[in-house]
Length: 136
Ligand code: HEC
Image (cartoon, rainbow, N blue to C red; front, top):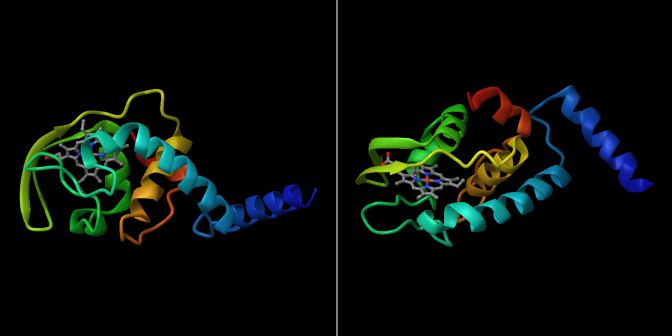
């Protein structure tokens, strides 16, 4: 009963301001995101987000991730990304394929929130509504 009340309160807060995320929602997104990361992103970006060799750029402490606006990051993760790119002073020129269609807006919100707040990064919480709005 208490959990339901908290959840209603969270929804009310989210309606009041999309920026106001409940800690509980963040934890849920982080947990979901970690699963998606380990299932999909880890192959290339590695377990600690350190990247691999000359092809897969790091997500850990990535200056690109930090300085690029969130809507663009959402779009690139969903639609894929290729071409020249500089991360932490190192040049990359690879191809990241589009995200498989099976992943939901909530999965995507989770995995980007996870990347933004793991591996020594500290960034925003991405909501499923953000994903819906910016993925196209
Ligand atoms: C098949 C390998 C592969 C997978 C899987 C993959 N990526 Fe990437 N990713 C890349 C490559 C290669 C680039 C660089 C593309 C370029 O050179 O333009 C990249 C670039 C990025 C960047 C921007 C550069 C940086 O390091 O900050 C982000 C953010 C990112 N990926 C996040 C993700 C997330 C989140 C996932 C999982 C949902 C994911 N990637 C899955 C290969 C991959």
